[in-house]
Structure formats: structure tokens, C-alpha cells
Length: 283
Ligand code: PLP
Image (cartoon, rainbow, N blue to C red; front, top):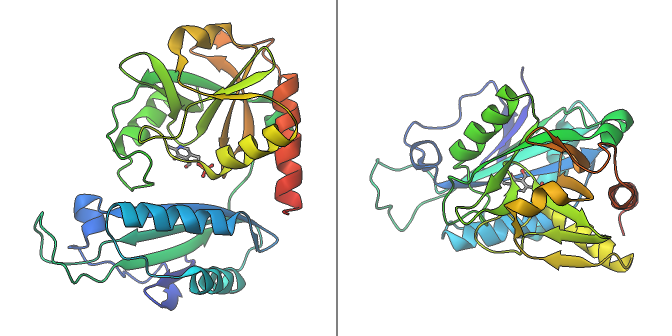
């Protein structure tokens, strides 16, 4: 399928083979990505995604190819050129292309790409029914706060979930604490309180996670940012995951065990509604 593609300052289509084989994103996973959602061509949480991209690139010393104004203008132009109204935009910035060597030259020009894809966001029935998840060992590395393209451990975990009839895998640390999903943040609900992992290098600072925390605080729903113990997982009232594509999604089962009464819980429904309202009417 041919889509509009932004590549290093110009627009082309995904039919054009733009990347060189010695691009470090391809050879070393030396790249950071972002995914934002758009509805009716309106980007959602664009600034938050820009900021996370900026922070991630700084952390691994890749120059940010845009400032806030040029980023916004580029993404708006991409959406104007795109033939559909709702979907996601995938952005990737790699360190660039150079003769293959672990040491990189200091004067590299980053490779920046962005393209839109149509996406079927969860409908009302799925948002009520929720998803099944499994737990799996977190085999990732020490830079999980950077949205890097090193997603092999995430992809293997997702595939394991799929083979077990589940939609998402939740990573457990070696000390049996709960981290996050393979492509989502994880929230537990116990006695009216939300519990989610504290921000550190073991999890990605999710844009929806952050929005949900803000909404919950404003709604006086208490939050504990702490690692949940694996043993606590099976004594929860409710659980949900959050992500750009899934929004606030109830978890109905963990490793085949039903959470709460297997239906979307009250607190989850409240948070989901608040989030959907914010997405529809951003402040
Ligand atoms: N954690 C991981 C590992 C992810 O890959 C994602 C999204 O892809 C998230 C959390 C959720 O982040 P966001 O809410 O910014 O989509």
C-alpha cells in the first residue's frame, strides 16, 4: 500500500526506497520513534509526543531534526497530504547513515521519517469487554524510558501473548514486580486506588499514562506510583492498560485468571470516560 512519506525535509511516498542499508537505525537499532493518533486530521497530544521524542533523542545524543514549530508544521502538512482522516502517525529518527562501525562519527545527519497509517481504534464493545493479558519475564534493557526501536523483546512477548490467546504481555522484573505492557502502560485498581509503576528506566513514560494520572488526581482518585508485586496481581479489584492506540483498555484476565468480575470495573469505566472526553475536547 502506498502512503505519503515524509523523509528528511521532503514528501514522497512509501513506494520510494529511501533508507540506505548502512543506516544505523537498521543496523544498530540506533533510533527513536513516536506514534501519535489523529482524529478528523486533528493530532492528539502532539506536543507531548514531540517532548518525549526530544527527551529520548537527547538521552542518546542524536540531534533533534525539528523544533516545536517545524515539527508541528511538518506533521500538519503530512496529515493534509494523507488521504484518510483518522489513524496514527509513525515517526522515526535514527542517528543516520555511515560506514558500519560501532563508533559513530561526530558529524552525522539524522534520518527522519514520518508516515500515517489508517488504524481501527477499539469500538465501544471492545472498550467494555476489555482484553486478556499474560505475564512474562522482562528481558529488555536499561533504556526502557527511551522509545527506541529496539523492540525485539517486546515483539517476542506480544507473540507469546497471541499464541496463548491474549492481547498483551505484562513484563515482570526478576524481583517479581510488575513493570508495564509490551506496548502499553499498566494500571491496577485496589480499594479505589490506582497503582502504576513509578517513572524510571524500566518503563516508557506513556503519554496516556501521564494524561490518566492528571485526570485521576483532578477527580480525587488516589494514585500510588510504585512497583506492584506479582502476588498482588491476582487480588486486584480491576486492572487496565493505557496506550495511544488503545486509550484506556480494561484487563479482564491475567494468565487465565479473571480480574474482578471479568467486566469493566467502576473505576476503570470512570477513568476511561474522563480520558475519552479529554481526547475529544483537549484543553
Ligand atoms: N509502554 C510501552 C513499552 C509502549 O510501547 C507504549 C506504547 O507503544 C506504551 C507504554 C504506552 O505509551 P503511550 O501512552 O505514549 O502510547
